[in-house]
Length: 334
Image (cartoon, rainbow, N blue to C red; front, side):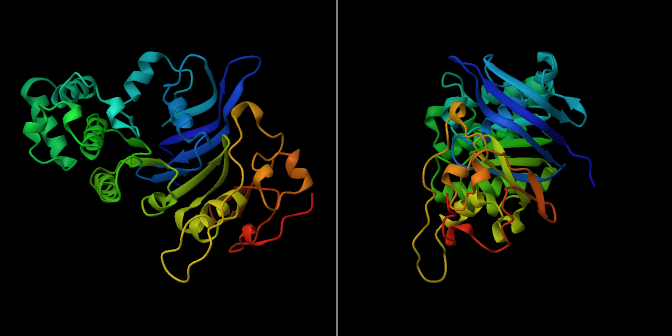
């Protein structure tokens, strides 16, 4: 087995406020191998983004982060600020779902790119300008030289996202964390951005973590999928296995809510309720109040993670058979 590039072990994030802490991420453990594409899916509030913001030390001071995040053996949780600054952008880069709020509106695109190149690779002058042009060309921006003098507000959402990707690539990172990179884009631009990320991975060997609530986006662009719910990792498997034979009721519910592209039309199955707030988590399985087959023990006993197939793990008390969706079964007796 290849040694992991990033190994997360028991990562927990608490936010202080009021009379008690709110736990946003609860003992999450996962790995990313060199060159691998990992998808992280779940509804809003599941802790997907907070997990990686915590890993990179980007959360506010009121957040208390415990556990371990190791980058090829280097511990990041609790690391000195200088060590984290040498990792962020250089070893691990992150792009966000709203590029307009991440780019400085009063500085030209070229200045922001050159600043990233100077910070992460020590380039300056004409060498930095030439590399900035190369990066804009790499991410598919036409007339790159003219775009260097543009301000962010002069570019479309898709072009701004490409600029963000170029800035993330400026440090030649080993891992790119893409947090909902296509949320605000139309379907055509979304496909172009995803194809761009795939081409960059193919050309550079870079690993990718793709955070999304869109299962369709994840299905076609990752090797392995981790499903999060209410701060916990509930299922993890190779992409083909998870989408072909999901074993956790929550994952099955997400898939049941997707429309089929072929075959007869069917009524979509919606998951009732909403993700619980961090300060009001159920004592047992956090999905139990919404689960159609929850048992008595689900309300009080947290389910253990069990191996249910090759590299396939699910945290559920019930041993759901492969290919059987619990959303087609009658609800268990209370």
